Image (cartoon, helix red, strand yellow):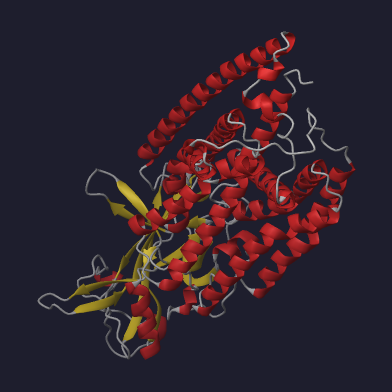
Length: 613
């Protein structure tokens, strides 16, 4: 066996463990266990220990019957002969028609299929190989289904210059469909095949005589394994997987988007600073000239601008949940940028996000109780319970419903009961107590004081122009934040639903910073115009202005579904829109909180900067 815990150094003839993972399809989005199909099985199937993120992703990593030895090529190795019945034949046909792929792992490297691109002199890599293909025999129009029952593996290794130690840096395969023939009686793995015999220099190089999937027919599974020395060092072995997509478009699109948003943000900030400076100077000058009776604009509503809004309790809960999301994303992105959550750490990103979300419950409780006390609330336990259960309860309800659908399809993506219990334990055992601790600490703090006094009788809001209609300004306000992220959103959706790797966390972090800036600035600008129109009901509108970007996110998810995905099954469509609805809801809470906090800071700043009797 290879040795060293993290980096596996292998001597010649050391055994290499080939593991199988889930069967995946971009057409159904429903993963299945490898051994749910009539593939060859080892004597004992052993499940690998999986982290929380792997289980939630639907990974099911198990041992395989493939036997590799370091730098020891093997040709035409027979694994087994299987006779399939009607049910197994139908399952194979269904999986092949749905374009399912087989995923394998060697030394933590996923299996890839090299594919030559016609439009350029380059090779791209497809994750996993297809279970089979559909096609016709020569001279026939009847479409048949064929299984890939012969695999030609290529293991690339980097050899140490001073020792005989080698490290695995690549794991590739070329699948073939071959109707194997043999002479005499079958004798398990000692049978010599006519169609694949290294002694007779007859190897499988094409699928000219494919193996058809039909009930009652026997399928012989075989494989070759070759080894190739590579100049790629162990530290760079993941570069092949991370360059699967056309990254040039990715880089230019992101940079272009960031430059446009930065330019707009700079312009908005400059206009706001100049306008506000002029307003504050004019108002203070009017006070000195005793012309306050003629004051207009945002100063006129100083006695009502900090009046508690309707449904203030719900607003506090939403802000607390948004703070929890903000903390989770910030911490997770920092760890990802530093390289702790690389794609080689399967499930690490999802595990980190869940654990960080749970720990950020402390800040959620603190933020919600602070605003609740500012709104003269006294039942801090009530607001704490709503903060701890509102969003997590909605998310868990949607997740449970979708998981029931997956379970009904007998997919390995269904979360087991033990994992479901662990999630509930994290929620009730850690998150809820932390929300209570944070809420208690926040409620003990002195209440946030408004810079101006609030009148006892609310003033009447004058009739507003059509362009200051709440629905119009809210919908307009969500366009710019969405524009800051929609290009990056395309790559995120591609990595999730087309099973590709997402790895440019540095750019994602920059996009996140730009999102914060744009949410804050567009909300502040629209809030300023609203106050200048003598409409002081800014609390909820500031939250909804930037939060409305979630509407565009969900609409874009629908556009992506119909233009980029090939999902045809109803259950798969429900899964997609269910999870995207949940993601859009989370995005609404996050962006709404950013806009609200920016507006809260802005209104306190401007009303504390002018002289008010």
